[in-house]
Image 1: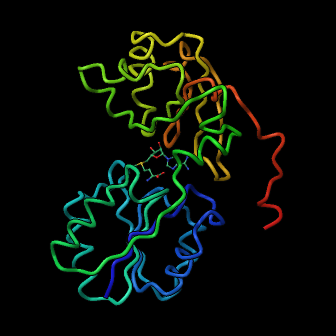
Image 2: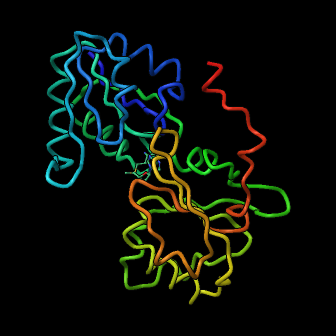
Amino acid sequence: MTVFLVGAGPGDADLLTVRAARLLARADVVVHDRLVERSVLELANSNADLIDVGKAPGAFTSQSIINDLLVSLGQNYDCVVRLKGGDPFVFGRGGEEMMALREAGVACDVVPGVTSAFSGPLAAGIPVTHRTLSRGVTVVTGHLANDDDGYFRRLANPDITLVILMGVARRDAIASQLIEGGLSRATPVAVIENAWTERQRETRATLTELGVLDVASPAIIVIGPCAALSLRDVLVDTRAIT
Ligand SMILES: C[S@@+](CC[C@H](N)C(=O)[O-])C[C@H]1O[C@@H](n2cnc3c(N)ncnc32)[C@H](O)[C@@H]1O
């Protein structure tokens, strides 16, 4: 009896790991989030129960209820797959769920996933690091822009790429704080919505325009010189091949 915390990748089912696909095929139960694409769920064993604990408005399941559910399923089924978008441990609360399972004495294992933090930009042809343009990458949640302490002011650094998850609702505050912190208003920005799905959409702008961009969640916001790159035209669409 084991609960597997499994990454579903950013969208396209081809971006699952082989191990994730194998586990889905033998799962008794799959407990999944809202951002997991239908094409990924279709890889689950046809006898498996699929439980949606998606955190969409109106369909909120609290984390403690999810933890209790995983403990109880783990005590009763041989193979429980807890399937989370991207990587379970990048803003995915994988650590909290693992601790709850450990505390209850339920065996668990992990399968990393392709995180949207890095693969989302790449879907628009943006490498998050690129020699001469960026010395590194910082991944943060946009929720931090709610804080009065001006967290994003301290993230203003023209030498790194800033990748922001869950930032759409706070894009105006994020842009203002980064500009207050000293980042140029002309800094390139890219927003990639629904990366690696058929609904993918990308928007290019500058930091001064970020606050008023017409974009919606789920999206990745990329800020920095790399956000001006668009290497998509030199890529072959491998989805046609695989
Ligand atoms: C709760 S976080 C989960 C992140 C996930 N664990 C990962 O590693 O990608 C949800 C946020 O991830 C981002 N996200 C996840 N999948 C995405 C996708 N396919 N396209 C764009 N953004 C995505 C969005 O910022 C979304 O609001």
